Image (tube, rainbow over all chains, first blue to last red; front, top):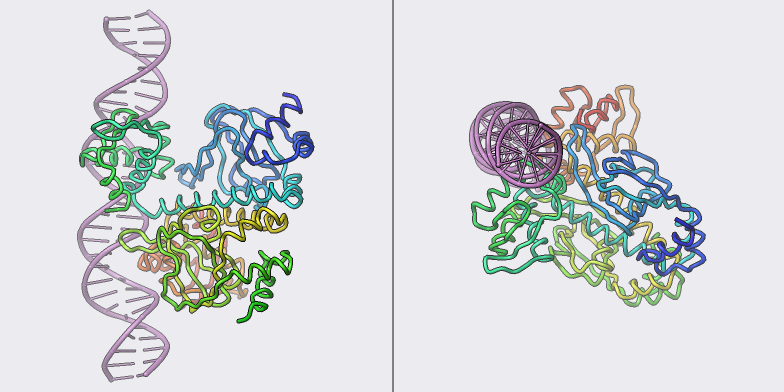
Length: 230
Length: 230
DNA sequence: CGAGGGATTGAGACCTCTCAATACAAGTGG
DNA sequence: CCACTTGTATTGAGAGGTCTCAATCCCTCG
């Protein structure tokens, strides 16, 4: 991959789309390009980060792992979205782990030039600020999820999925789970067993039908009730 | 309170310290000034916010309240620190509630002029970006807290308190809880009963001594172990 | 001294987790 | 086409942790 590839790739990323060509070119010169295989851990608990990352290909998951080994997936990140930015720019350490879930090609962006850009380039700073605030809302939402039980968590998740990508049938709204149930459990912060039981519960209540990874929601209203803990 | 009071007050707030006098003055003209008594709720679940807030006096708590009434305090905010910023600038809704915990005098800052400043004033945008990223780290940390049990949560909290404001005695590090135990419980996301039992547990293990609201930590090392779930 | 609020203690319920067994699906090799 | 393997999902029994509810305690204040 050549430098000009980097430059044009950077431009294609929303965060950098307004940045001037020269700046992108300079930045491209400082970026490292590496590969990582699925399962590899690219950031460990407590690592000091002086760079953040952008995927060109593949996927990673940002997780917390608590002492007894249980893993909580905070978010999964695909190509084009910078991650570990806050840790690199203002935090001294990254507080969780980042694990590659699909073989990845990743750009390692040093923090120093970005910090400079942050001071000099108003549009860039504004964009980064907005992005960070969006992340904030997302994290708040996640916290909210942790304050309710398994049924409500799954309910919220299914409700949102039902709103998005979905086909309307006469029996209800149908969609496919975008990940294996094991991963979904980690994402919801529960065990696969509990997830399975919760699916059964919702199915027994005739709120949804589960067949493999495809879900049909029969009653959005009931789903909302469940997701609010009723 | 006159306009020029506003202007100079704004300047005294870190977020606005670099902003020009004129801009501050313009902003001051758009700010509303109100009072709120302890116990009052100034933002409700799902409120659409077109403004954020800064306290001149008093305290507020940002919380989640789940359906059965249990309250989780996300953060408590004192004078000079803008809050509900992300919700006002990028989110359509505020996802929790904000409650006044000490009689407050509050400035209501409309989002629109701030959004403009964000685009035009590089220093301001940079500052807001950094602040948001700090919030990010804080929220991540909070999430991490929710992934561990009561002992670990309290352990983490006490450990941090011990590092900060504290007096060193021969028996250990002493400090005062900054809030009633009921509030601390809400802050840790557990019930007062569980908090009490957890305090007893740590005391029985000779890790701390609790007398009213004053805590003596005898073994920081053990506290760290507890806070890591060992 | 009594009242009231916060804090503590105890008993029992509820939920999620753990561990172990089983089921199911897809793919492999004979 | 049939075992066999492997990975994922389900089911059950039991343990552990936190919550709820109720009673009691303690301290402060009037």
